[in-house]
Length: 181
Image 1 (tube, rainbow, N blue to C red):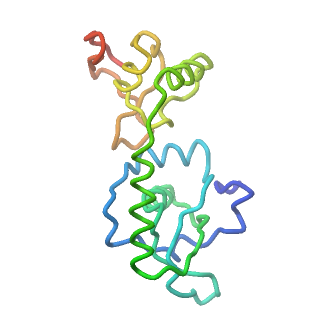
Image 2: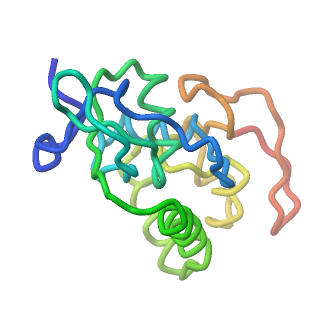
């Protein structure tokens, strides 16, 4: 089996059992969306963990301060290893970094015209839109025409990523048209 961790990150791989979720993590993620992304693209960036020691084999152990949802998705996928960067932060620095990592991502915005063009280019080549994290209703709103999505499986948040939401009617927030994704 080929490793789901991209080759440049493999030197950072540790057993998933070496990592703990941050019990004080204030952010909640959509593991289904991250799981779909990991299945489609593999792990392309490491999680960040506050080092707490070493395992019996000498590999580092730690508490994840950035990438808790990625760790959870990897566990759900049954991955034995995950790429991780370990830092020797004190508790307050680790907490501050965790908050900054999540908040700075929230502060970004989309150029909706550019986003729409990228989504259309993926739809044109029949790319599996379920791995992108948007719902069918989101995509319909961004693309402006629900008909553009005919034939594409569109997953809903919280789903397992393997299902196609057929038979569920959604309403386009722009034009009010009802359709089945």
